Length: 427
Image (cartoon, rainbow, N blue to C red; front, side):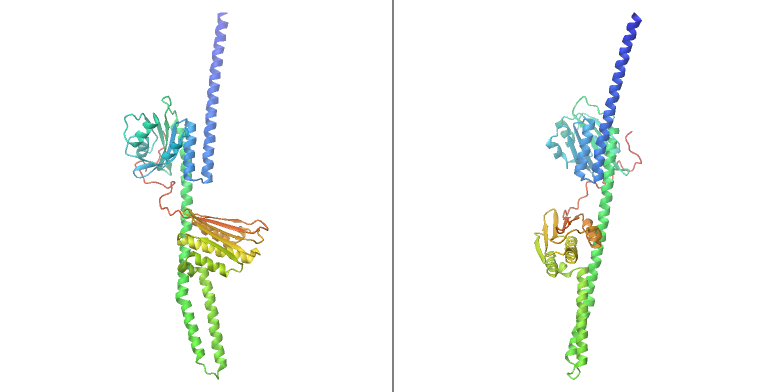
């Protein structure tokens, strides 16, 4: 009887242990599934090439939810400080995002400075005796524990992700390893952005070099061949004027030759305008667009509002887009009118060219439009075409006017003390 009771008790104990193990396994599976879902969401943002602010805030949010942290920040290392480029708060406090853009000194106690100096993960418990603005902020937020993980881009120390806990019972067990997957995705996004930026810069240099070559050829034609043709034409007209009346054949031939020179000169001027319109350099974009409208075979309504001077490369891009668009309207659209609208605000130039023609245009079939798209995208802009059959064609262009020479939030930073190590993965 006693043996039977002991067997029953043991079986109950074993069943309880099995249930506990199964629950722990389910919890672990649930945790892994949540982490994988969070990583997929971040990876999707990376693949889309989303903006730096959106990506960094998303990384902070996903990591905060996975670690059940109170706050998470993403920082980018500079020569003497870390700039907060992304932030998240468990309480969804609007004030939490205001920390973005703040600068944290690297020479003061804290996780941020430790990661910068060592290139490895770091922890810190308690900010009661720490000094400096970061420690003051941490005490004000009630933070009792922080864990930081480096963001490495091709073995270079780019920045740090830090999770903060306000719950005294929170331990962040294994947080460093779990944070690593997120930092690797951030590194991938940074590399992708750097590659896109390098490609855009290369395309912009190609466009600028081509424009300079066209401008030089136009100038040489104007100052050289065109002037010589004008002089020869004047000389022929002068010779024609002194030919005796009894030599009409000679006078006629001189007149015909002078007229031929005039036609050649006009052809050369037309070619010169196609290379780089002189009126664009001398009169600016507004008069140049008016000239294009006057020369168009289709009546053009011009609506231009420019309250500021645009960079020369933008002027040239807008001019050639309008020139090509109006040429296509005349050749292919069967339109009775076209409209050109141009606006510029503090952020970008907005151009719209519309016609009331037959529509159905395929931008992939025209090498001219492909070249224009390359030119616009080289300036960081975009060119879109809408051409439904029977409803005309609309060509819209947006070119940014940021004028900001500051580095991209994705740019690789100044090399800090932690750089130069072959491997700095969490131990």
